[in-house]
Image 1 (cartoon, rainbow over the protein chains, first blue to last red):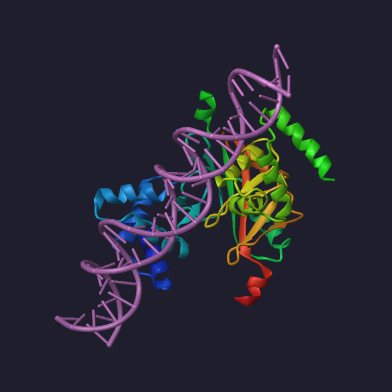
Image 2: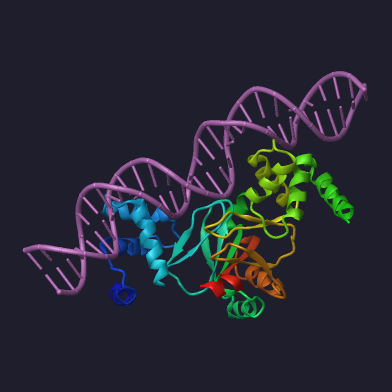
Length: 143
Length: 143
DNA sequence: TCCGGAATAGGAATGGTTACTGATCAGAGT
DNA sequence: ACTCTGATCAGTAACCATTCCTATTCCGGA
């Protein structure tokens, strides 16, 4: 199972010219292990458990390479660090303004929007990110 | 003209319990003067021209109050400071990844999207921000 | 095996934003 | 107008996510 993923990713690395080092592999594994939407720091802490010598900077660099070759996606909410995600398909994520938990919003079609944006601006659109904030059910219950 | 605006804003302040101080008024005037999407620093520099004693922290605090009472809106693109806007209606802004210029994208209907989001998440949605990046016409010509 | 460029560890630096503190201000009530 | 009290402010230090820097290590190809 992970083998299939590995094949694809190896291929992406080969095509891009970047090398698939042990640190970069470890970052990918950490992204799988931290099911959810970890920050660079979260990933760093997970990677550190197996390799205590990794540097936080290396995690950032690895993430930026992984994002560049299209293997991971990132989203940034203000007031909290950037979150990373193995799901690179366009999709919506919502972050709880109280506890910080991020989760996915399913079933919202976005293709239309991107198209409408492109036809209403003279800019060459390179990226559209939708950042949703709210209160998760349990925080809503509290208060 | 500015008078009418003033009335509305005075009203918003009265209702909220915050006081309309000279610094907060100056921040509003700076937002008008900096036609576009200034950062806190941009606003600070404009305000400073008339009142050299203002502190940057005061500008941040004023902006957060103005945003809270619904008089200004803010958007955050990663890799650049938060931009502020007197246009508080939901709308799209695009930022040039090369020169940083921000401009508005007109004629894209968003009401539908917000509705679809609300009906697909158990969260109580408080904010939906769409952040678009691209290359502006002149930067596109250069590169 | 050896070489050269890419990647890494470790730590310092950066930049936007917030926090802190004593001084100042606004405006409700006299 | 005067006073009082809490809100606001100036100035500055602190914070934190992220990037930058440099010497060392690693990796893949000749």
